[in-house]
Image (tube, rainbow, N blue to C red):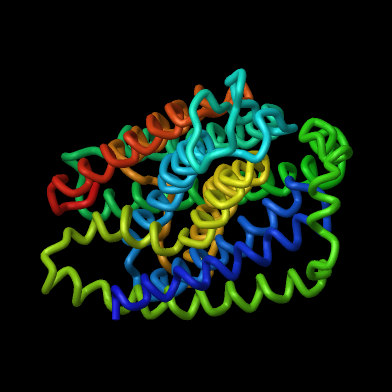
Amino acid sequence: TFWLNILALIPLAKILGDGTEELANAMKNDTISGLLNATLGNAVEMIISVQTLRKGLLDVVKATLLGSILSNILLVLGTSFFLGGLIGSSTPYGKHHIIHVDEYEVSRCTMEKEQMFSSKTALVNMAMQLLACMTCALPTVFAGSASNPASTLAEREQEHQKVVEVSRVGAIIIMASYVAYIFFQLVTHKKMLTLDEGNDSDEEDDDSGEGGLSISWSLALMTVTTVLIAISSELLVGAIEHVVEHCHIPARFIGIILLPFAGNACEHASAVRFAMQDRPGLSIGIAVGSSTQIALFVVPFTVVMGWLLNQPMDLVFGSMNTAVMILSVLVALTLVIDGRSNWLKGFMLCTAYVFCAVLYWYMPPPLE
């Protein structure tokens, strides 16, 4: 059941990618369409988190959310940069790409290719990512400083309750920051980000949008596909214990690497597909935007839902997990800050993700 549901996500990801492409052509705004794709994709993580919270598996929830952030800013973005920088284009020069070859011949694979995207949008997303890292790092430090090895069991429970209270207040503050982030993108600076992407003069996108689905039909297709993905992901979660027992795969590796990889298959396929079509703005909007939504909305959402379900969910991810998340965001920030991408940048991000996967495979069983 576990592997069958992973395979079932592949055609669903293809359908969701089709719906996103039709929506992008109809709206002619990569920022909004990428934001919608990330939102529908993250609905899967939200459903899985609520179901896992009800069972009291708080460590699994944290591992899955951390894995979703890592897979988006390292694996999805890295694969998009890597393939987008190698796949050939129909012309040597375009609004979002340039091939530094004097006599360019159209081919499936090319050299000297560089893609260009909006550095403003990418930097806004990465700044919000750093804010999310701070809100996870500080409660972790607070929990470590507040703990006393010589305290009694009652005192330790009281200390943990303080950490939970700090996390709940912090979750509300983070969600307010996410609302401000959405308001910035869709209301106060919508035109600035759109002009920075160059969507006002994209004649090719205008032509490709003719004869496609309308905005309402595209949204309906994406919504139905997301519901099917959520059902498949629910069955996937139910088969984890069987896989751990019979396949001897570490539970933490499943939670941080395999489960987010399957849950983010739709974003992964869509982002890579748009990068190969020389639309890096939409690709980054899906990859980095999805990671930002998880860090700023889904993580505090699970804390609030744990509050409602009477589960002591907090923002303490452990020193190891917090260090991995902060360093991953810093690596991604240094690679998107110039607004250009190539295959080497993508290879570096994928290498970082593979190293994290090896790290969590060999990490001892007790979760921090």
